[in-house]
Length: 275
Image (cartoon, rainbow, N blue to C red; front, side, top):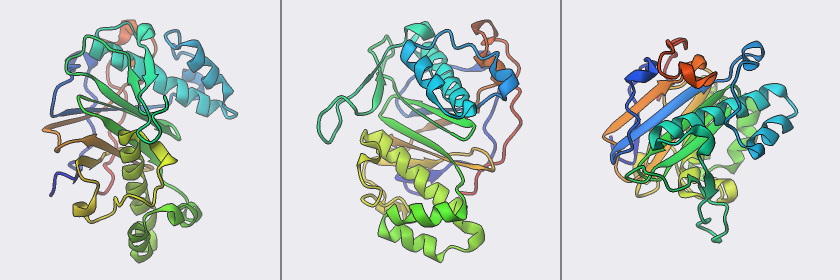
């Protein structure tokens, strides 16, 4: 297995007590945090007091309340995690955009304002259909989580992929198609977020299919165990991380900071995606 792409072991992510965790940024380490959107009754208990005005406006702007609740959940989780890594109160975490690698404009990778974290901290956030994923590393990182698409969506979106990825989809059985598309697409979005372009760079330009030797040079791409209904991936610049930690955040951790240290895990074990 090459450094360009690995599949993590097929076991469910751990969900231990949060006080067991070491919130450390170090070379060769990749931390990945998964969180579920609370249901609408529990959503009323979500503590959004640490979000800034722009985040609150964005959460309120979604047509579907469940989407707004997922956005708020993801950003509460992000702020509290980055607060732990940087020793900063969550409400004081400040974000900015790095320069776009294409045009130099201020719409590249999201970044956290300089902190005491050494080496510098890089992060990425993704959320889709009830699940959010946060990646934290010492090197540029991108993450993506997506609900597995309907067959008709695979047919439509598959036309945007690299020609050789389209060929792999064409050879897949009907039973394999959705999971295969999910792996390719999440790898691709994670990589494009990692380099800072997002989908302004054509999805057809980079190959992230089955042949690991042809994946983008200088990046490691990982398939992440998630849920039976979602695909997830991470891309980190450089060689394969020596340590990859995948964990679920327990829902109580998102309610009040008083529960951060002592909340018992409540997430059920989830099956790993086939890689």
